[in-house]
Amino acid sequence: MPYHAKTIVVGCGNILFKDDGFGPIVVNMLEKYFRNESEDDFDPAVISYIENEFPSEIIDEVEKIVEGVDLTGEVKFIDAGNGATHFIFSLPDEYWEKVIVVDVVDFDAEPGTVRTFSPFEMPRDKYENVHTWSVEEPLHELSESCEVVIVGCRPECIPTPDVEMGLTDSVARSVPKAIELILDEISK
Image 1 (tube, helix red, strand yellow):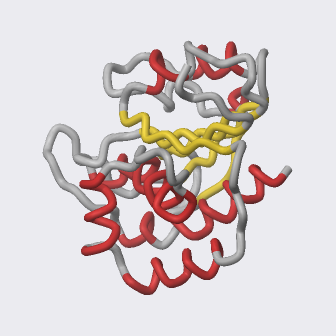
Image 2: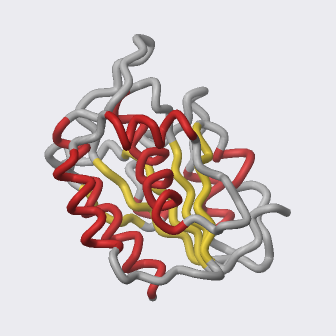
């Protein structure tokens, strides 16, 4: 399996629907700073958005957070888009010790609020993929073989079916906090 690492960080969502792109944008940003020189797993379209349209003050904040952090070796960043439910979560590698899922989560908080969740405290019927298949069950099953943590951000706007790229200000401002939480989870 190509995702052979002790810690897997999976960005879920669709960059075509504003805040739903939170997971892929965060994971591509992490891949940009920590990429394995032998692999090019980041999405050039997302990296272009980050480099050309993402607020520079947030990029500066992220660069301060990641400065001096060494993640060589056992961490793999994956932009799973909308395919995570059945592609990633149902094909675990026995080598995995921790899976960190990065996605928007509809919970009772202000837009842009970021926190960690266990798969068992996810809001019921609020965490589904684009086909309205519940993601809870695959995450519960995956948690039987490794630790699963969700780094979730409360979205402000997901305009489906209308295509609108780019994060809202409140969600974009939450990216540094999400990266801090992810790096903290990786170090545990």
